[in-house]
Image 1 (cartoon, rainbow, N blue to C red):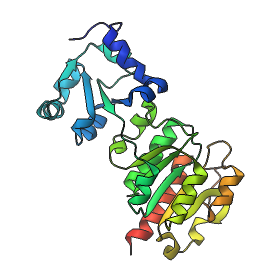
Image 2 (cartoon, rainbow, N blue to C red):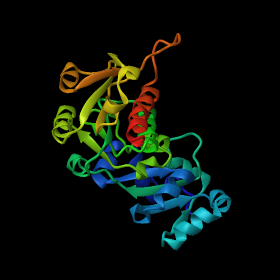
Image 3 (cartoon, helix red, strand yellow):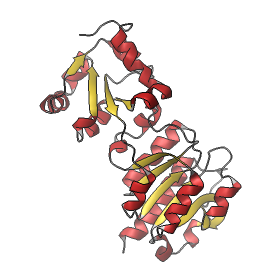
Image 4 (spheres, one colour):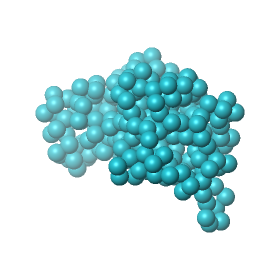
Length: 265
């Protein structure tokens, strides 16, 4: 068992909580049993696996799957596990995984019908929740712009609850370039913006067409050049007294509106 949180091995892995280390190594940290369960569907992506004795005993089937995939489980103390996590209450297991993002060209080449484009999204929880919603809605891909939060940030990874492994995603993409390429490939581009046409006024026929939903920054929305590049601005109406909707909530509504229309055909 690895018990010293100051050991060189621990320090080396713990560096992956920082973006520079993730960028230079092409690796990221995956925390928690649910994330591990999803990652084990693609076990070759897992480079190392660390777990406490308690969590191994609590999830025997999960770790039997890991061992059957020829993954060696490194037992660690609670102190070591905490050193590998950026949370105050670690979930008992941390995996080091290979990064899995794809290129914008790969996404376009797959002929997607529903795509989410995150333009300058900074909040890790929002980013991860939108990715999870896109997965749940059956979207074909999600794109993170150059100035958005790092998708491999441990907080983003945790908030996806494993959906990170289900849906193709591209990172560090120029917003206007992505819009142009996607539009040229036949997708309509909607910007989710409070000043746009209300979503219920958009016909099901229109929503059923191949669509990219663009979601802007939580605080200041969209840059003018982004709005100038989209086909239409669409608003989620607020019928109650709330001032606004959380970004992830609005994104879920928009993605499902398209999903409902596309799947009813």
